[in-house]
Structures are given as structure tokens and as C-alpha cells.
Image 1 (cartoon, rainbow, N blue to C red):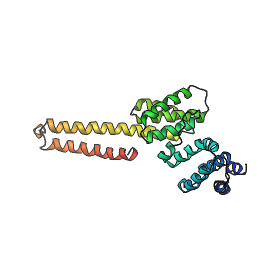
Image 2: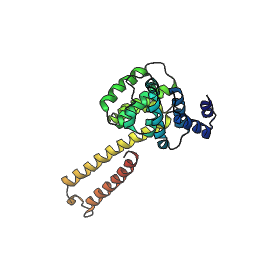
Image 3: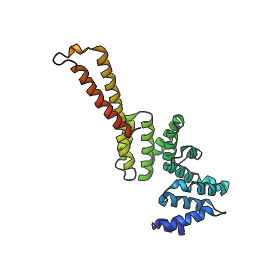
Image 4: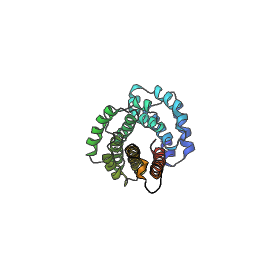
Length: 238
């Protein structure tokens, strides 16, 4: 209760002190563990430095408490972008939308598309139920990410477009839309470079009647512009 109170009041130093104390306790239950983990996810900078302490505390939990703490551990490893560790905490069946979102991102980063396909069906089923803004947004983000990873950009854009009005996930949605447009830009760049190669193969400089060598100069300039765009796009989507 004390830890929860400090978190609720934004008392970062005290909240982290109590979280550290809880993780070091030789007798810790799932409620204490989940509360401490929630505190560091909210207030903890440099989560990587907490990893040994969290893992040691989790190992001391009873088997029953470990099952209760699995969802929090999935969220913790998701925040660290430690996808291999997060994989071990994926829910077999989950009725929690945020867990499905974390699981989807984990599977997509590990390129486990078959497993992600099964998870997509679970997301669609849950999306048909009455949901609050958080759960609804989490499912839209999971589905948009899934279709974007598969290259189904139009479908992904539909999900992300619905998400732009969700204050919790608007940042994720807008950046995802920009990334999709960058991918489309790369496709246009690739098509343009191929066309320039075709022009070079199919024509000669004799077509440049007014200025000698003008044709190659024009093609070279177009190629430079496209490669400049390509370099910029790759900064958005490496």
C-alpha cells in the first residue's frame, strides 16, 4: 500500500527505494513483486540495471506466484526490447489486450509469423467485445503491426488510422503511418532506379539532339536524386 501510494503521488525516489527493498526481500509474493515491477516501469530510468534484481526476485517466487507475475514479466522484457526473454512469458491464452499487444510485438521482432497469425485471430475475436480505450487501442496497434510486418500496408494503414484519435497510442499510430509511407517511398525509389537502368540499356546518346551527352547527364541527375531520397527513407526504416 505504501509503495502504491508513492507511485500514485509521483514520489519517484521513495517508490524506487521501496521497489528495490521488495525485490531484495527473501520472502516476496506476487502482489509485492507486481507492485514493485509496476513502480520501476513507471518511474525507473535505465531499466536494464534493474534486470538482475528483478530476475532474482522472480526466481524466489512460488510456482503459483510466478504464474501470476508472468504478465508483468512480459511487460518488463517488452520495455527492455529483450524479445528472446519476453518469448518465455508469452501467454498461452490471454484475455488481456495489453498482453496480446506485447506478445504480438515480441513475435514480430522474432519473425515468428506463423505464431503471430494465430495471435492475430485472438486479437480480432477480442476486438469484437466491449472494450475501454486502452484495450481497444492495444488491439488496433497489435493488428496494425502484424499487417505492416507482412507487407499488407493498406490494411495496416486502416488500423493505424483508427488509432490516431486514441490519445494513449496516437504517437505509435502516427509514427507507424510515417514509417509505412517511407516504405512506400522506398518502393517507388526502387522502381525509379530500375527504370533508369532500362533507359540506359534501351537508348543511346544520339537521342540527345540539342546537347551532346545531355541524355546521360539527365539520367545521372535523376539517379542522384532518387538515391538521396533512398538514404533519407532508410533513416526512418532501416
